[in-house]
Image (cartoon, rainbow, N blue to C red; front, side, top):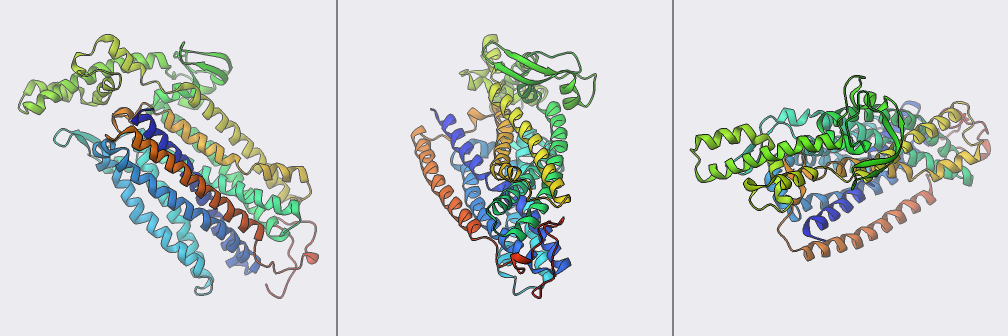
Length: 528
């Protein structure tokens, strides 16, 4: 494997591993706020015990997320030096703001959350918990603004003096529709992860006959919050699909395994076997009109296929080659008016011209038609992984809605612990939201290839000039280190779950068998 493949492998592994912790942090932070609001408004000590218990699990997960997230940012300097030079002035700004505004805010209030129970009033501690949740979500916002710019670069221009991209409109970077859609969709998915985790652990407690009062209340909160979040994921994902169809049509075509543009409205492939070598998707099972409605919200707009998009990209590659040639002329003769005119006319396609270097063309200005076609076909991402990642993610999303709805109905009818098979299903469903979240990122990032910055900078040109063996050694080191961290994480989380919440302030013999909407119909107790 070369430097590019090894660098992609390392960043992919560390990013997917880091994202095991991010969604649970997002989800548990909001759930902690909900439970503490109930504690403050009712004064019932059991709700404080619940906040403390789930807060411990949140804290373990938060620490692991911080430890794994920092190493990712260092990789931009160690493995992706040219990327950092080329777009660092834009990409680095959201990351810096995330560190200064969100991370320090979150980290400060996390300490107050754990050590302030006996030092702060109820209202003050609730404010601290809210700030923890706000910092968590702000962190996600700024990271996704950076990632959204990679998916759809706006508010930037190429500066020949520095040979890099510079900010031309920072408000456009902030309000990038791609970033905003990714933020709300990703955050809602994180809420689903937190809700499923809480609901699954509560189901395990009910199956074991332990901590029934806490489990019933926790499961009710999680089911309610999870149902709302899972419905939001579907709605917000639909909005994200429209954005992708507009800004990244090649990714949309790959997601659908659609090689040719179909008459509007296009059909949605529920099932198919993409054959990238022969440019066809076999054994298709389609829903008529569905893709047109999803991708364009209309019945008269077509969704472009891969082959027509490749033909369009071939024109952009040829245009980019002209921009590259004019740029080379201007670097030696800055006053050349003809070269400046050519460059200004074709600069928006410069990134496509750079693709010629990734297919072995030394002199971009002398590229043959065959080489231009090869560069154009390199804009097609791996279709099968993107196609199936998306479909499995969607199927899991539908399953989550059904499961959360079933448990919400059980909570409403005060029968949460009466159907053991449903509790078993809930318990075994714990890892599924993580799988869906990871598949979502796989769809987004693999579907963007061959670009690190869509249409601007190819991945193959973004890496550092380091020996492949150095990267291979660091990949092996990360695998060993992160495997060890995963074992530590599992040990701490399982130990905390086995220990369970603090002393419940109501003897189990007094708890009624029919649970109420917030867990159980509560009997008065002196401690509360």
